[in-house]
Length: 149
Image 1 (tube, rainbow, N blue to C red):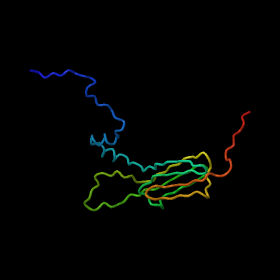
Image 2 (image 1 turned 90 degrees about the vertical axis):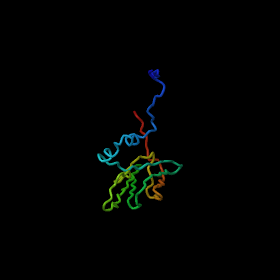
Image 3 (image 1 turned 60 degrees about the vertical axis):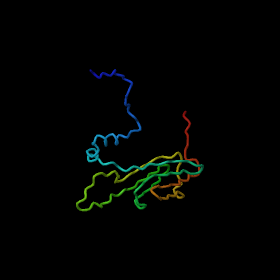
Image 4 (image 1 turned 180 degrees about the vertical axis):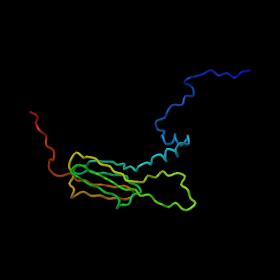
């Protein structure tokens, strides 16, 4: 006796799921260690920028960084944030690193605002891996629109 089953193309179809992370798929196929060795992942600065009346607020996530390793520069309406994440060298004799997911190196992020920033009144605070910038807008109109003739 044979065990034949009718084919149903819409039955047990597995579709690609966008919430899947490519890293998770590579882990499942044991390809992750080879990919990690080929190129290091750089640290990233993720941030939120908001505007409230007379100032801009910036919250930037920079985990694992010392306060002295963060640089913020303001040039008119251009704001640049850079930070250096240093690697810890705590590998003991006879110990081997199996997996390292933490990023090390220099991260930089620059962005432009609609209005120039008053550099003298700008403030920066860093606590719990989050850099908070308060950037007051410069008084007066800094933009000029030209009439086209």
